[in-house]
Length: 124
Image 1: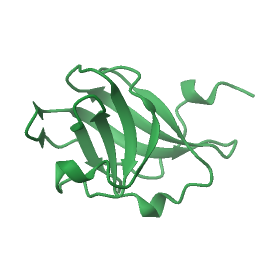
Image 2: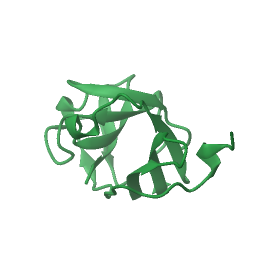
Image 3: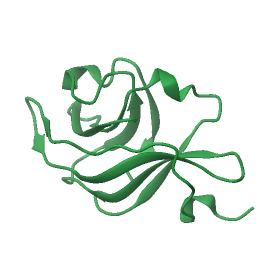
Image 4: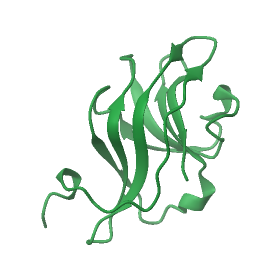
């Protein structure tokens, strides 16, 4: 099977990264997250033109909390897609095939060490 993560699968949704402010950080991420599907049935969360502050122990979540809501709620109900691959550039994160995307409202870059969001965007 071809390397799907290197391909540019078609988009099925997209969003943008608004500024995130919390007690511990204030970041201004850039780029556009979107969910994608490949012709092989896999799904991905794709970051396009992505850039955010560097930080320790950053992970990518899909969260049930809205992107513009309380930043402390992002880790209340979420699924982790993996460690952040880099703070600059395009990247893909596999979405489990049995996951109901409708249950999640935002894509989040979360710092586990300090329990704070570095970036959050709505899943449109």
